[in-house]
Structures are given as structure tokens and as C-alpha cells.
Image 1 (tube, protein in one colour):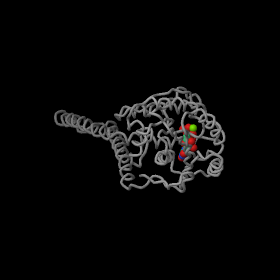
Image 2 (tube, helix red, strand yellow):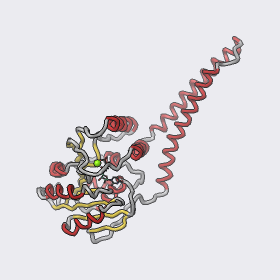
Image 3 (cartoon, protein in one colour):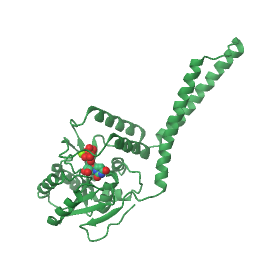
Image 4 (tube, protein in one colour):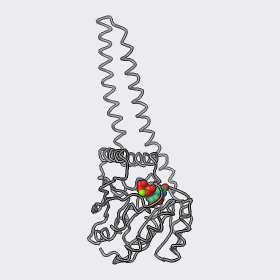
Length: 318
Ligand code: UDP
Ligand code: MG
């Protein structure tokens, strides 16, 4: 498939320091590409001078477009706004901090022109991340793979290029509880992997605390599987069965050996174990309930303040 216009989508949240570095790199790379490009920045409610810088960059380079969101909605929403707003027949998503090396774009484009629909970068080394982050990330994927039946690519971020078919598919996804990485796997199509070594952030600080990551992880698990609910049911059945047997034992002992007082320690164990399990079960059910609650409101998950660079008004496609 010949690509005529490649959209480069970059969600930015307080990335003022990174923009000059990123732009210089992009100019270098796009000059070598065989197709036209548009560079779409989604300003995710930055509070530094990111937007001013983008507007200045746009004055010198008409390939630059800016979708300015009304506040910070998070990267998942910013990426969604970008997917809805780009015009290209191929789309690549980049982080602003140069952790997704733009040098890979020509290779990805070649993959799309070969007929692949989703060419994704896989990080081979994450040396600049601490052990705990790498370990939690591995556990997250293990659990996600174990409980969902979609093939989620490990060590893969949002750094990927989509064909027009894949873009059209992504635009059809309307759910508001979004874990984009999961959705990229969910749409299927022919995928190709390009391994790369991830460099550290070019400038500035990461925007993801552990709390935000945990939120994303829970969204991933709950929006792609109901297996946790089923596990609760099965465990409930098993515990009831065990309880029944234990009850018979206690009754038997009391009736035939006159031993009416069960041990206090064993009683405490049972009560605490069951109490803990019931709370856990409620928590898991609560997570699903929360998703249903947010989903049923059908609230748009981002709003556009203004769109700079495209004549036509952006449709908010939720
Ligand atoms: N980002 C965003 N909205 C947010 C947080 C992050 O648009 O609320 C953007 C950020 O500007 C960057 C990309 O998402 O371009 C990745 O963020 P970051 O580098 O902080 O994440 P990390 O690489 O540490 O996972
Ligand atoms: Mg980063």
C-alpha cells in the first residue's frame, strides 16, 4: 500500500524543553521520507509554554498542526483525540521526549507499504528504568495475558505506525475507559515488530507516577477480561465446599466425642480469611462496577479547545 500522507501524532503535556530537540530530529527524518507528512501535536492541557512554542513552530512550518485540548485528560485521551483528528493514510504515534526514536519511522513506513497494518516498536533494553518498574511491568503483562484472550505485545509502548485500515478500526472504538495498548492489540490486523533500544528521556521529567500506572493497569485488566469475576465465583464455590466438610467434621466430633468447643485459633483463621476474601471480592466487583458507571454516562473523554492548522472544525468522535 502506497502511503501519500503520513501523520506523525505526538501527545504533549508540559514538554516545552523537549520540543526543539524533537522538531530538529523530525525535520531531519521527514526530509528522507518518500511521502508527505503532517505533524500533529495534541496539547494535553500543558501549563508551561508548550502551546505558545507549538504555535510559533506552526508559523514556520505549515506541516505542523495542533489540537489543543481543554485541559489535561491523560495520554490515552490525547492519543484518541489525535487518532480522530489526523488526515494521513498512515499514522505513527511518538512520545515527545525522544524515547521513541524517530529514526525508526522510515523502517516502519516500509513495513506499512509492504502490507502490514500495525508496525510496532519493541523495547529491547530498559536500562534507565529501575528494577522495580521493570518487574511490575513484567507482572502486569503476565497477568493481562493470563486473564484476557488478546495477544498483548510485551515491552511495547504506544510507539507504532498504523495503516489506514487500522486507523479506521481504532476510530470505531467508542469506549471511554481506554487502555490504548490493549486496544491496539484488540483490533488485530497484520502486525510487525521492530526491536529498538529505548534511550532515556531527552529532557524534562516523566509524567507517570506509580499511581497513574496502577490505574492504567487496572483499566487494562478489567476492560479486557471478566475472568477475575469468574475466579471469585469459583473460589466462592471451593470455599463453601471446604466449609461444608469442616462443618461436618465439627458436628461429628461434637456428637460422638463430646467436644463442643472448637478451637479459638482455628475460628479466628476462618473468620479472618473469609473476611479478607470477601473484601477482595467486593473490591474486584467494585472495579467493574466503576467501569460500568463511567461507561454508561457516555461522557466525551476529551474536549477540544481549538484546532490550529486544519480549516475544518474537528469533530469530537466519541
Ligand atoms: N503525556 C500526555 N498527557 C499526560 C501524560 C503524558 O500527553 O497526561 C505525553 C507526554 O508529553 C509524552 C508521552 O505522553 O509525550 C509519554 O509521557 P512520559 O514520557 O512522561 O512517559 P514515560 O515515557 O515515562 O512512560
Ligand atoms: Mg517518556
